Amino acid sequence: GASGLFAAITAARGGARVLCLESGSQPLRKVRISGGGRCNVMHDPATWQPRAARELLAARYPRGAQELIGCFGRKEASSSFSPTDTLEWFLAEGVSLKLEEDGRVFPESDDSGTIIDCLLSAADRAGVQLQLGTKVESISADPAGAFEISFAQRGGEGARSLVRCAAVVLATGSASHALAQALGHEPSPLRPSLFAFRLAPGALLDASLAGVSLQDAELTLELEASPSPPEPQHESGAPEVVKKKKKGAPAARARGPLLVTHRGVSGPSALRLSAFGALPLAETGYKGNLLLNACPHLQPAEVAEELLDFTQGFHRLKQVGNISPFQGAIPRRLWRVLVANSASGELEAAGDGIDPTKKWEELGRAELRALEERLVRLRLPFSGKDSNKDEFVTAGGIRLAEVETRTMGSKRVDGLFFAGELLDIDGITGGHNFQSCWTTGFIAGGAAAQRVLDARGGQSAAAPTGLAQRAS
Image (cartoon, rainbow, N blue to C red; front, side, top):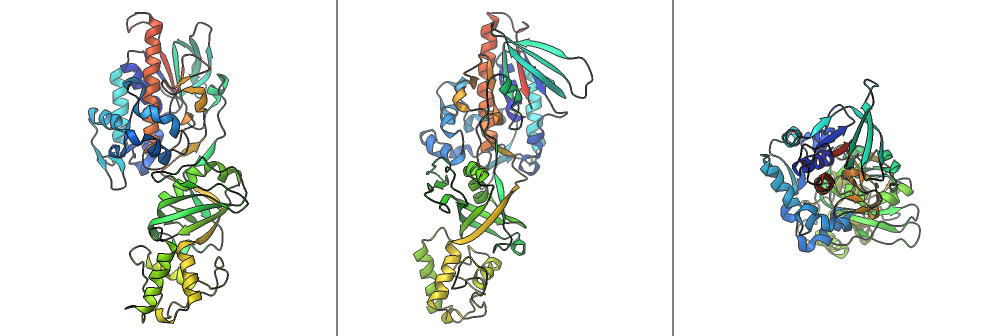
């Protein structure tokens, strides 16, 4: 994967002999399909401000934010790798990058193959020995501080091989923790992250509105049970967590673009909410309610005022279903559904609403209040999740309390290092997960190489002592 090969490149450039064992028949498969095949390689480095590191990382990483502060900004170059460093690394390798309006950074070619070719070429030039289709059967550490790795080609062809090395970097991804467990590291529970919400039958936003989007929406998560809420995040766009006091209390909220799909809702706001609420959502079986505010740029009283003005001003004789005070923010298809289902009784029930052909001046107070509620607090029951085709992220992994983040080294086994999604680090959409891969891979690879050099005791680079790199 991305972090494994990046660690291998860094270690080899640091003077270690590197054997990279890859289980698949092709390397960097996830890089190839990420971002719809374009590879969102990172987020805009101009948004990275070291002085605001704590707030920025809290907004971008539901898990691992605190530990990444130093990884992104230590004074020692060997133990940190910031977004600015990432940009400079790829530019130095000849990759032209482009910045999109939402802060995502892609190769100028819009082809993930550009990133793959860059990494494979860098690995080859550095002398990394990449072995594909390899199943690592065991890793053992001896009292002298060396490792013995047993591996064989997948499919049963060929004899088992053994290699001894001074350091091991595990970068086996979010789905494979067996090797780490065998070495004494038990991962925290694994849960899906970055997913779309599947709305329950009867929800107001159904397949008839598929493709409708809001550029600015706020979603509040309301769970059916009362698990412990996610860790509080308050600054720089992080979902605000509201501690639950009783069943039905809101757990978290997130703001950003929203997309209606054939089965529910997706888009940055929904994905961000799913990331920060990944653990409690799993505990409740992905059931609850989303409360949609379609006008988060206004206070509820301001929404009410805008509606009242329409009943008295220039548009008072126009039909409610044809024009709204929020035409630049709310698509017409969605507006007509909200109007038709703005009942003055139980607001969550789709039923008799406002006649769309009614004139604005004919609306009464109860109808205006109902419409205001639909705009700022539309309850959307959900009963499941759907995967997001551009992101494949898991919450959970090797506990960071067991890792020295200055080196990404194990606190339990000397010479063992970790990188990438194997760790209990995950970010929101926009290139943040790849950034944590580059950062942890760079730090782990550099520290592993230093251990190899120390073990050499002054031997030349051709000495047999080296680094085994296990990448999923």
